[in-house]
Image (cartoon, rainbow over all chains, first blue to last red):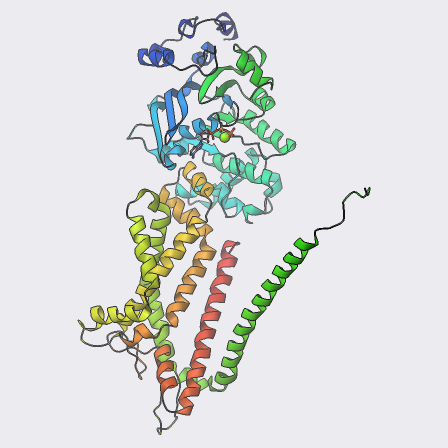
Length: 311
Length: 290
Ligand SMILES: Nc1ncnc2c1ncn2[C@@H]1O[C@H](COP(=O)(O)OP(=O)(O)OP(=O)(O)O)[C@@H](O)[C@H]1O
Ligand SMILES: [Mg+2]
């Protein structure tokens, strides 16, 4: 796979319409003429920047999530301008970009959490395993069970640690105490929190430190056994040790879960993701294998951002 | 130029103002507290002797009869039953309305009229509600009755409970709702399992205030339950209540009954106090944060 990636690297000077390289049959967004038109009419974000939001190596993966020319506006304020993205199943995909560029918005759109915000208008679609997410007939509840979310700010419920972790099981109607105990222990272990809280599972979650609360939220999301884990800056409030634990966790989750993680920490993106998308002002500017984005990005804008000279 | 790390406080004006404000706060807090202590102390002093065993075990006995002046058992029981019935009707309606206003109100054209009506109703003098109860529930039935009394009290409770519920639920952080929804909970589940329990402590306080308020109502009962000298819990008949009995005794000519009225007030206030305290303690032990 690496080999093909190298032979099909897009050069920055290539016009976006003429992306070279063989595309895997049936997997390409650009095979849709309507989207080609949309991509062609995309207003330029940075002078001279042509987004390279389709990468052959990403294209070759099995996709669990695809984003098709997705646009979103909060009221009159357009925040996402035609996002095209394919997310590889069982891999870790990082979203990076300066503050306010729409990373959280994109992430929250993936499990339709933006439905809760008043005045949100969307266009385009996203597909989970080929099935439209924004279709009118979609069972949103079921969708959200499959796409779990960890928020930027830890938000444990005002309940005991145990009740927090088994919340998803409780609402699914799980009655067996043995099963609840088992899932609770397993999830807390996965989130590297078990040792710290095993003696006080039934005390309030508010007695935990900020970092512990965040790991509790991760455990709570894992306990629901989602297929995709959406993580919005899960480490922004954590100390280096807790961060490392979460990163190890993300590393262990790969394969079993698909992880989409938003981060401002370039090292974190480089360390724990397989693919990285660089976003800027509501667009994906460059998307590809993490190594390619960090070591030999195509666009100088991406390079400037990942090396910390801009953004 | 001194070389100390932190310069000395110079801003004496700010200090004086802050000290002055602080003393004002202390003075007024002390004023309110002593007022409260004075009222309670006075009540205890006057009413205490009449809070006897007979007070709790006997009904009213007329002047001249054996055992005069008897007790207030019928009124006490009547008030408990009336407030209980009012709570059964008023709390669910009020809470559901409050949940609607807070959780579903944003997308509904109904919410601002409902809120307006609740605010107006909460401000209507209780005697007006009593007259309404008389017209709707006493005149058609043909006699004063307990149902009318209870429903009138419920009517007074609803707007209070609805508005406090709304206010308290609004204080629950939005992030709890999001977290729950993101875990695949329905909106109803989220409200029942996360939003309402998070606000449980303050919701209980709001409900208690509404209960205490109606337990002390007299005017609406004058037109609806009327009151009764009998020990009865039959809501089809005129219904006894502590407040009405206190009113009768206090405005009557007999010294012994006037003292009994003071005892009644003392018992009413103590009941509300103890009830309030125990519910809060239970809520605290159950939810950890109250
Ligand atoms: N609920 C909302 N209502 C209106 N505008 C919003 C809302 N949420 C986000 N926005 C706007 O959308 C834009 C993108 O926000 P978003 O939270 O997606 O950025 P972000 O990339 O996650 O930034 P950060 O790195 O700071 O978290 C911002 O300009 C923000 O002001
Ligand atoms: Mg964000």
